[in-house]
Length: 427
Length: 123
Image (tube, rainbow over all chains, first blue to last red; front, top):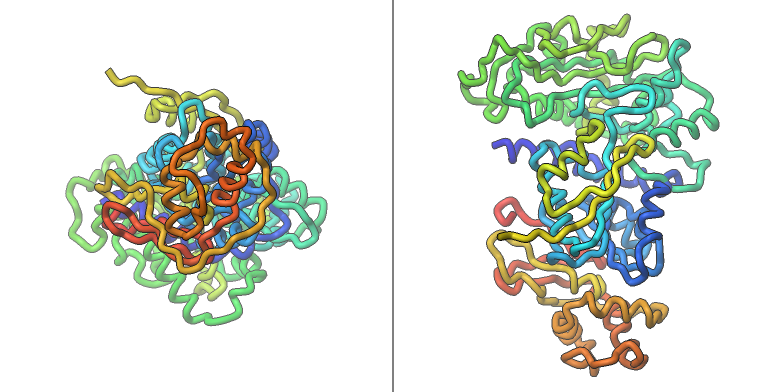
């Protein structure tokens, strides 16, 4: 079922990734977004606020006059928040363990973009609305598809975790700034021990980028993005491509990761397993039989994504339509004048009509096998559904009648909505 | 887990309609010292389910002489407010579990953190 696929995707590419990278969040680089801080400071004394998806609790110390509690699925992050003296629980955003109408305010900062279907995103918002009292307010921040100088090409993406922002700054004579800006969202998780303030973990964007420019000499590196069709449209899919850059290219990215040191065969297997797992949402595992297969030209399949091992489902053989589910890797090459959203395997795709991918130059995509370091990177891919302008407000207006949108704005790399819980009268 | 938090928590197991309040079975309880802010306590009181608070304090053996019902004019009653302050903010469950009153399902509390995650079949 779609629900299981969605749940699995989130387990693999949200929950387990945060479990792994949690230690990197608890550093000095992360500060609170000013507007979120202000939202908290504006609350009347004696308010009760819930930070749903609180992560390491970066917002829980703001405003001593209100009672704050936080929750998250990630145990290591929640443990850290507790160690800072905060009231925190483990729970799932789709099933909040709080009674109806008990909160005066709710925060959802960079959380719901991790839900992999529209339906789940709506359910998450409805759950939060349920716990709000009438008149209470919710503030939601999600990653924006539109960044200041560019946009993500697709809305459903996998973003690799990069613990070291310095290596991740793309160097490009032609087009340095925009590239780094788009890439900056994963720079946000970077560790920078020289700086001593905290930042929202997943939406650093502008601020991070500026910091990196100032403090770090530019280094040449690669940026990797996976783009996939949303699970919502998975039944339309026709083709699949997974491409992989050369091992040389990836070495830069992962060299800083401490965990590369040990257990390489394990990581290799795990990474391969993950590629298979990710791709299995969109095609049967037989497509990805080996690493060499990844580079094969014909990976176009008509198959029910929810039944990868079963026979072809005829209803999905919409050959004509051929809306590709393309899980493609976009590589940002420092020396190339490329937009950041390109597919290495564009020539190998049986293109769907709205694929606007371009071929990278000289990336050596057929080079050799992956190094173990590369495999580690695969396992730290986080799934995001980035939002278009107006999408979040629209989502609420059309699906969550108990919330009334009062503010809707763009804040750095995020779309933000503030909404008020209203009383619904049922006749 | 403080009792102010507990007052908000409910069982959300599928099919349960009377999941509140959760019963507390504590194996380790701490009492901390927290700055007394009477205004803060005053403002919290109307937001509480009072009987759930009393029941919880009782289960932890920390009820002392907290009244079963709210006293009138509590805003000016510093003695009362101090008692409430203690029970709401100073008493803390470090280890134990929270039990759904209807289904009996137990949610563990470890290192001060209640784990309210449900299994696939409960959600």
